[in-house]
Image (tube, rainbow, N blue to C red; front, side, top):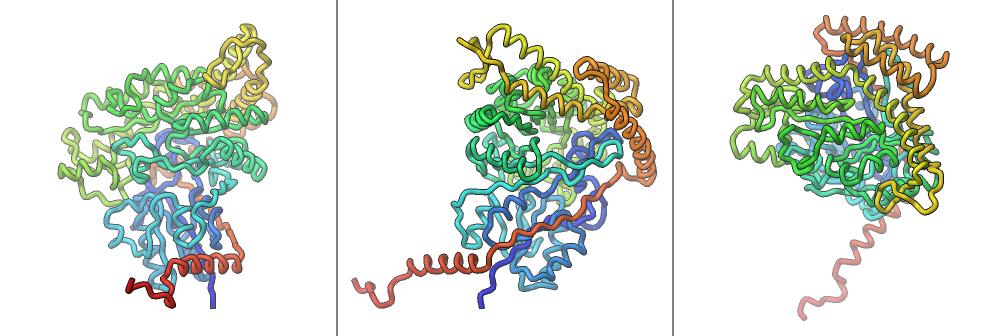
Amino acid sequence: MFRPNTLLLTAVFGPYGVKDKYAEALGCQMELLNNQITRCQGIHSPRQAYWSFGLYLIAENLDTSTTVLDFPKWEDFTRELKKGYTHVGISFIVPNVLKARRMALHIREKHPEIKIILGGYGTVIPDLDTFVPHDAVCHGEGARWLRAYFGEDVNAPLRHPALIGPAYERIYGFSSKPRGAILMPGLGCENGCSFCITSHKFNKRYVPLLDSGARIFEACRKTESAVKATGFSVMDENFLKRPERARALLSLMEQHGKPYVFDLFSSAETIRELGADFLLRLGVRMVWIGVESKNSPHAKNQGIDLKALVNELQDKGVIVQASMILFQEHHNEQNIHEDIAWAISLGSSLTQFMNYTPFPGTMLHEQLEREGRLKQIPYRRLHGQDELAFAHPNFPRPADHVRILREAFRQKYLKDGPGVVNMALTLARGVQRGWEDLRARERNGLAWNPATMRYEKGAAPQPDRFMKRRLLMMARMATGLRPALWAAWVYAPNSAARRKARETMRLYVDVLGKPTTADRLKALGLVVTGGIELVRLRWNQLLGRESIVYQPSCRRTEYRKDAPAQAATLLETLASSLETLPDPCHDTAGK
């Protein structure tokens, strides 16, 4: 009797951010901002945890009936297995490998008939075959790989899911409904930085999921229609590296009057080529730039004045998230502190600090292995916010690896104040500068030239209605951050941060007018909830925890497919295979 395949795609089980025999506290917190960017900012740190968005993309594109189980508790996972799946796919990162191991061992013991498929960045672990029981490992892009595995059409166009991004959003103790969406245009990166696991997992190639501006625009329209989202976190290592795709996307947004907003990753050399005006017009709210080091050997930063680039982008209202790597080969006790000071001096609204980490499969890992410098660090601690995984000649003490990293976050916080204020200030300045530039261009007869991606003198320039929509959207984003400024002022870490919050509030009055009654009530509410959050934070710190740990709720999503259709697909696959077999009635062996 034909039994159709049924697939369970699951993330690793919780709780998260709790140190136990399966995971470390910090490295598995599932919060990018509080864990790696606004760390040490206490109640000022925005709190977000993102869904396992890749699983939804895969499920959307399979003919096999699939269920996605996201952020499950152990009880959720074990209960789900009893529903009778033929296959279970476990997605995990390197620090969570012990969780994946426990899940796989449970399946082998309680449900030996189920096939186990492993996926995610955790699959780069070299001894995975002896560490986590499995029947197959998904390498490369997941949707097409699983299509091939189940005998489906590998070349069918990929459908993009409509997916709200964060599982939760909190600021100053107040929980709000997430509104941003996720956009997944492609995987991998061609830059091939020696430490980059993303680039090396895809063999230094870029794998497009949405290969044209038209398909990206279609995905945005679909998401807006389904979940009412117009802002997107772009999951693509270097989205602007395909400028023709971005230019086509901008053209379609202009044609349809859709000023969508994007948070994305890009390298400095790509931004310099495209220009700040293009990023602003495209709708880039925030751009993540890997600045790495003042003496960076990476080609992507060569010959670029990064401070000037950051200033230009933020003057126009594009929030910059700079990323720096500590304990690189050239760092010593003196220049590492100079490098930290340099990264902070760039003036980016947000700054990430990560320790140099040799993930398996990268050139860095291969180099250090050849040199015999790799240390036997447990996989669960391989997350870039702890002891180095290799022997650094200038930093032999593990305590220094953690201390210097924390000091970097602390210095950024004390010098520039809360990141939420910096983001609000950048947006307000961008609105102010944007309207001034728009009026100046209209006076001087300048219009946007999509061919050169610059504003140029035109024969008969028309009013720039699209840019007016873009600036109104930016003003709306700035307004959304306005209530947080009062709490930032009340709970500021020092007088400089308090003064900055106050000056930002004055700028808001100049640019957006006086706060409404609703703005004032929201601000007062955040001061109250912020006070409660501060008490909770201090209590957790007394208990030895660095921060308050939040747990995302489990979400179960079914993608049920028609069983007869699956049977037909199977029969087509078998028929195709039979066509390649020799005809038993026509023996040609003797010819």
